[in-house]
Amino acid sequence: MKLQKKISVVIRSRNEERWIGHCIQSVIEYLNKPEIIIVDNNSTDETISIVRSFIEDPKLKNTDSNKYTKIKLLKIDNYSPGKSLNLGIKNASNSIVLVVSAHCVIKKINLSKHIKDLKKYKCIFGNQIPVWKGKKITKRYIWSHFKNKQVENMYSEQEQRYFMHNALSMFERSFILKNKFDENLTTKEDRYWVNSIVKKKYKFLYDPELEAEHYYTEAGNTWKGIG
Image (cartoon, rainbow, N blue to C red; front, side, top):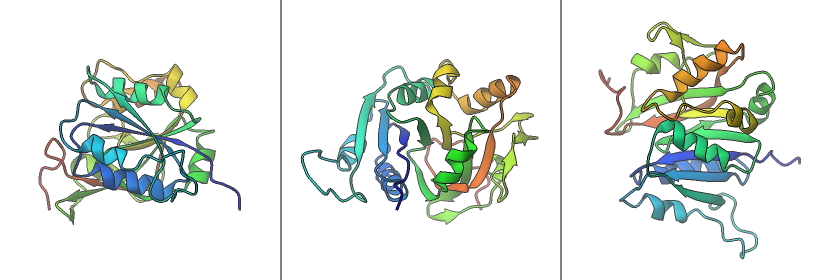
């Protein structure tokens, strides 16, 4: 059986003790010994302790691949979404990078298809299922973008611009190194980035075969009208 291609996974964190273990576990279960890069913004809870519990010990042989993997821990003080992503991707060892939110749990991935599609598209982003206190809620507001069919160069009528979301997205590392995320933005770095690459005549893809449950956090801005 042919081994699955190695990829790097970038996860940004700040006080994510509630969900980060679930996130990492799902990454390990769906990918073959991935390299995970945690970019942490001075967490004061148990986030780092939980992350370390997943780190593979290279001195031990036959380590259970469903429990441990290689993890890099990076610290960022002057945080911005774009700066943390650029830092994580810069430190990735593999040519393909998957970005996952620390409070997302992967439910579906077709890695061979996604890697093939990255030859044509400069970004692939996946379906998100919003979950509030265990309840899968109606897809309103930004959630309404996440349909069950593939969309090339998704355009948002709500925002009047092209739409992409970094909670679950995939890139070729080399392309991001040449087309970095804006480090001065405090939010929506994904939307600004994807609009900039479309201006350069590149394409991106929304693919529901890449899917995660996205869990409610107190800092979330898109949970109004829960139901």
